[in-house]
Length: 287
Image 1: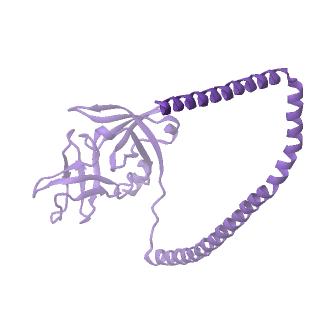
Image 2: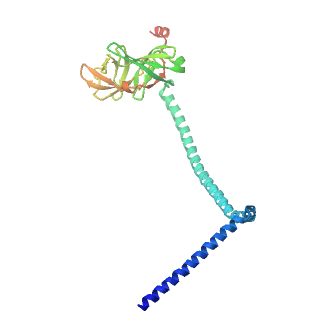
């Protein structure tokens, strides 16, 4: 029983000491708060300004070597990159000089071969883009209406109209900034074509459907299903070698083909300005 009483007394003593320290701490904190409240704010601001005035130059002086090292590293990296890029450009320049000399040699050889073969250059073509604004597909006609815009002054009847797949038709009528295109599937369309593979010629005639007929082929023509027909250039109105259609059936007395384009994809088309056909008066003299 005595031990328990002693322990109880010791525990009470420790609690009293802790309470004393706690009260003293609270008193000190309160005193500090009062002192801080009484201190002049201007004095504190002046002290902070003085510290900043003295410390800022020191901080700047300490940071100068680091900035100098960073700037030097940046400039050295730029110089090394410029040197490497210069070497790369020198190598490309030497390769271009070799290609230029080779091109000149090929041009000279090409001129000699043309002269030897009596080659005639095909006239250069220009092209203009136009937008499809209307379609007229019926049992009587297959045509499109194009908006030409500023290109209307350069477009004439007979010019080829193409898209990414190949020939889709020819300009029929030009009126202001608009033009009507007769599709190759129209019953009035007759396109001189040649087989891309066998070089057999014929006339591709439309009939207002997807199936077109190839007429006047050679008697011993080697035409097969899947062969591509391209423009032959006969007549001078169409440039040669424009894809036109694919042969679907190659019978003895009936050869049919289908166009390479689809009406659903006709939005922007290209008009090829190409005409080396003689005028009517000249053509009469030649006949």
